[in-house]
Length: 497
Image 1 (cartoon, rainbow, N blue to C red):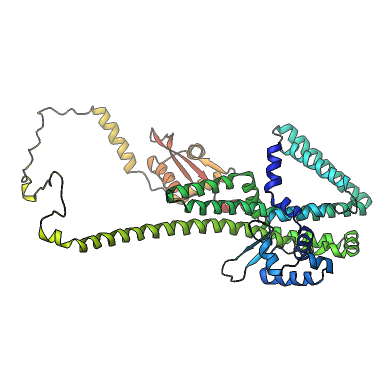
Image 2: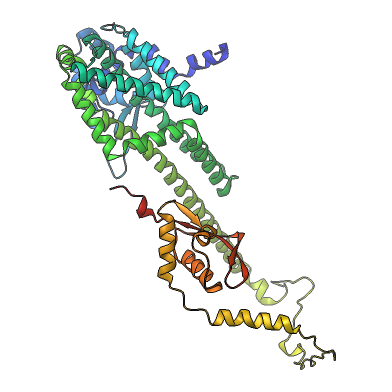
């Protein structure tokens, strides 16, 4: 990061603005009290004002002399764009505003919190986490089948060895108390950081919405240009690594099974004796409440991101609707101005001294009677040419083929379907040419046509007209050229019970 970039952050970062503010000790301690200690992500404005009133009353005399504003004045100042410490907004169909910490304030609180002396520094768990991540990336990006198989066999051997040890000794290799507490603290820290980073995703959608409002104020910008810019920005966000990651996370989290597992994991961790004792000795940290509310907080912040996306669509709809109304209003205004001019100068038009409407080059009028009458067409004339007749042997052969087709016995469609099902018992799909190799054609074209009708009626079968295949009819003595047909097993056959 070069000098200019560092200077820009120092001059414009809301996080540094909060840390440099004279109100930083008071504001940040209140934010810890109202939001962090109670595991709250958003608080109604009236409730936050009441909490700030109580917080001010509990300050010592020196602090009260330093911070003399009223509670609502503090909140309005912190939520002002010039400060950006709090965000005040209205939820849909609600009259009372809500408040929440901005992403910059969350980073400032996290930085202050990291200054606290830790119980211990978990070097082992940190290194193992880095090691496991490196190993997972190296293994999961391997495209050599032999190397991948070797890795899977090693994992299987480790699992089999552990199973054998447990079966032989009846003892489970369990982490010790230090390792458990170390990983528990890392879990709490990662969970807190994950929730705070959601505000960054939400800020991206808010930034797009702000750009739409700025575009709306420019009269020269058309609706198409605004729509194109919004959709391009939305597509870029959806296709970005951040957008793909959020979509995958949300799909995972909204699953009922995953929610139940997350809740079960949290309860099981807190029931561990070492964790239960550690939580009991640190009641002010509220580790248990934070972990148990992790699922609901993740759902809450995820829903806020989705609401920001919906707000973007709503802003676009309002924008297009407002511009359409403005255009319609302008048309009505122009029509009213024309009527007003007509009323003011009606004597000029009524006197006939001035033409109201002029047409250049006149009108090309065509009367229906000017069209020509119907004339009968001329009779077709054929050349007097002797028709050529086919050879006698060709006519006899053609008559024999026609007789075979007409006298062919009826084909049972159920019998053909039974053949197809029998072939599909051993394969997921089979072509028509493979079926006729096992069950040769006996009744000629009608039998082949029966297979085609079965393929056309069922959705799981495919007829590829761009490809053809030859179907031999040995008993009739000819070959048919038909589209390539693939019969596929029905979906219900794939279900496991």
